[in-house]
Image 1: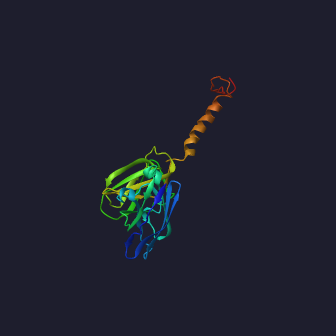
Image 2: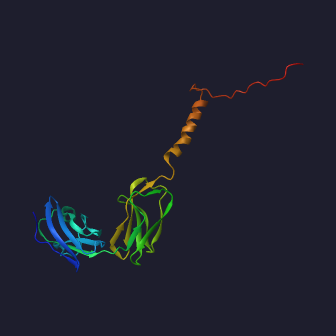
Image 3: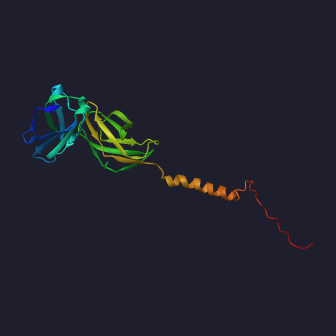
Length: 239
């Protein structure tokens, strides 16, 4: 049995507060519902969940929902924490603490919207607004698989993204950008699509044309080698 003993209301500033409204235990998962108040609705936050098992020393990692960077203020925000994945078959009592700070992103990506289409074997300019001067790691992912990237790249606001010519087509590509000096600060781009450099129909047409030509020369499949017939020359009549 897992018993949640206490929760914590963490004040993040004079005009900002976090209120934990409800905690539910659903099988191996804990659902934390909270309100994030801010007089400035344009602010974003980095929200982290901690537990008493490690004396609140490090944020929990098996979490999803309204947690991590770029969380907007609002009521009824939810975090889902998988206790089994985090601690295994844990029993006993546990306390949770929710912390939040105003989030100023070290990069803010521009003009890379969900559904953007890139072609294999080509390079594209990626632009962002830098939030600091720390070098960054820029990595290309397909799903959970790392395709490539560059480490300790200058945070100068522009990067030439080369799509490998042998990259598999798909709609689950995105960029992972990490602050090299703060490895917990990670920004993901929206998902985008990688397409073949040339449409498939362009590659198929020459093959179909060759097949049709061979069928014509084959004479209906008799097995005989086709021979060219040259007509006899015509000569003028007379002596």
